[in-house]
Each structure stands twice: as C-alpha cells, then as structure tokens.
Image (cartoon, rainbow, N blue to C red; front, side):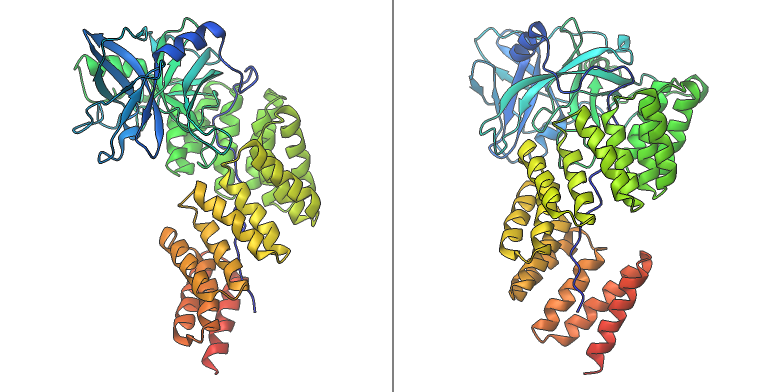
Length: 498
C-alpha cells in the first residue's frame, strides 16, 4: 500500500540579491549610522508579534512614528511603542489606516515629555543602484533571541523605481538582509538620512526570502503633504528605466505572475545587459514555470557577470536538482556555501540533494546546520522530519514537524507529513486531523486526500476512503501525476471489490 508524504520543492532563494559589484551581504552598519538608527527606531509590540517604527516628527510632546501598516493588521490587540531608552508608550491605533491607496505605510502617535531624536528626511530620488544603504529595526524573537533586539544591516540598492506604481509602494529594492520584526524600521543613506521604510522580505519562512524592499520616503513626503493618495503612474512607457522595469518584474513575481515578470526583466536586460540581478530574477521566474534549462542559462549569465554571486549558484543548484542532476546541484550548493558560509538555505538544499543520492549522514548534517544557522527555519525542520520518517523514526519526525508548524502555522505540507507519521504509529484519528488541516490550507493537496483515504480505510470507513481516493485521483490527473493517478484508481477498485 502506497503512502505519500511530501518533500517540498527545494527552498528557492528569491529574486532580489546582491548587485553586480556589491559588498558582502549581512555586514553591520557603520558605527555612526548605527548610532543614528538606534535613536530613531522604536519597537512596536502587541504581545504576540513585534515590528519596528521610525520617529519622524515632534510637535511639543507629541511624537509621530512612521511604520508599515501591516504591523497593525489586528486592530483588536493592544499596541505598545518602546523607545531606545526602554520607555513604553500606548499609541492610539483605533482608527489606523494606510496613508495612501495601496501604500503599506501608517503613522501612530504618542506623547512624552522626553526629548527623542527625530529622523532627518532625505531625498530617495537621489538613490542609484549599488549605492550603500542601511536598514535598522528590531529583530523578532527566535530560539536564540529571547527578546526583540535592535540591529542594523549594510547593503546596496538593487533598484529604485520612480516612474511606476508598485504594489504596496515598494519601489525601493535592496540587498540588506533584514529579518522578521524589522518591518517599519528606517532605511538610511550614507549620511544617516531617512530615505525609506523597510517592509518586505522579513524572514526565512517567506518563499520570497531575500526580496528586501521598502517604501521610498518621498512617497511619504508626498502623502503627508496631502497632494494625493496614489503613487504616481507613468503614461509613457517608453520613458521607463531599467530600475522601473526591475521593480515591475519584482512586483509581478511577488504575485506569482512569472510570465509577466519575465517580460519586465527582458526589458531590464535590453536596457542594461550587465544587470546581473535581472538575469538571476528571470532565471527564478523560468524555474517557477518549470523551464529549468532556460533558468540555468540565465543563472550562468548572472554568474558570468558576478562570479561571487552566491544566490545565483544556489538557484542554479535548484534547477539542476529539479532536473535530477543531484551531483551537479551539490557542486553549486558547495560554491554558494563557500561564498556565504551562513547561508542556511543552501545547507537545506544541499541536504535534500544528498538525501536524493542516499547519502543520509551528509543530508542530516546539512539539515542540522541549516537549523543551527536559523532556528526558525520551518522548511529545514520539515525536511529533517522527512529524513526521520524515511528511517522509521516517526516520533522523532513528529517533533520536527511540530517545530515546522510552530514557526509556520500555514505550512500545509508539514501537516500532511505529520499526519503520515501519526498514521505509521497507528494513530489514525490523529493523522486525519492533520490531513484535514493540510487540505484546509491547500485544497489542491492531492497527497493529503490520498493519505487521509488510507487512514479512513484503516479505521474501516470504506466510503470516506473511496471519496478521498477519488478526489486524489482527480487532482493527480489535473497535475499530470500519471503514476499517482493510476495508484489512486487502483485503491478505489480494490475497495469497491470488497
């Protein structure tokens, strides 16, 4: 009897990466910038999650904090603003709204008799690709960081779109490795001036990891002046720059429109054939469309333009893995790790390729290292759980799936896989609960229907089992999984013959 637990597609590093001549990723800010950032950055805490904010205005004792609107997605919670000196204030968030239509910015206010430093507003239009910038904010709690901690990261501008409307206002794209909790924090130029508000690419659990983006401060300045509630649109597409097309490609890729993203990146490359990041991003889009050979061509070009492009090596490894060329994939992951020894995702991906080759000791070592580097890495926990599942160590696998779900409660694959482990322990009712959740999160998860059918069959619930196998068969057929489709049909015939 065939049971199916899911090994997710290798975790693909997303599009936005180091630019062609970028400095090393993940460096701390310069001391003078760090000092400015620490004084103007506040922690936003609702008791469940944390975010960041930036002090931008003072009128008497009234302070204004500029932040990401998504930090206040739950207006029923009580929010607290914590300044750099540890003082806590209660802002009024009852009627909070985004500052503009499809602009992920909001302001909150609090009163204090203390004298806090206010950000100096810069001009984001002056930013150019490869300019050094700095992102500050409070890192969210992790297994190794028990309380939110201020930090500041160095990076470079990847694109600064000025003539297009990008979803959320995220026209400023960069390589700074911001993490969960830093949304709403300041993006500073080399003078320490505020040139943006960070808000995208906050953690390893988002498949858009490394898509770091912020709202340029000029959008806030315009909205604060009351000129408009819309980001300006351009009426003459022929005037768009490579940066504008890059931002459009970025936005389309975020929404899953990979065909549209490819068209945008084609325009970027036509305008600037040496734009290494655009080749990487277009390769990513091709990979998502299953065009792995075409993706590899783009990654080759990105690496030729920037031989130290760790993310392009990782992504090319994924395309080779998807083609079943596991040894070749491992070569690329090796190079990615050599260039960036703290790259948890490359360790995770290499571990998966080792597992495919049956090299289990190397696989588990890589997955352990991925988790060590990022204790909240849900995908690595899931993959390590799969490793233990393969060995028949189901209780140990469940522990890892628990962690994966803890760090990503919407991780349908982990629910399915945990259900598989419970099923193998004979805990069929418990398995069905997990399959139910997997299906709720992803109604097109054929494996979850198939596995639930097996658990129903174990409980003697023939009709429920047949129903699930029929749903699984239909989905397998739609998804082109002919082998699994036939297997589901065989299960139906077997049950109907009893």
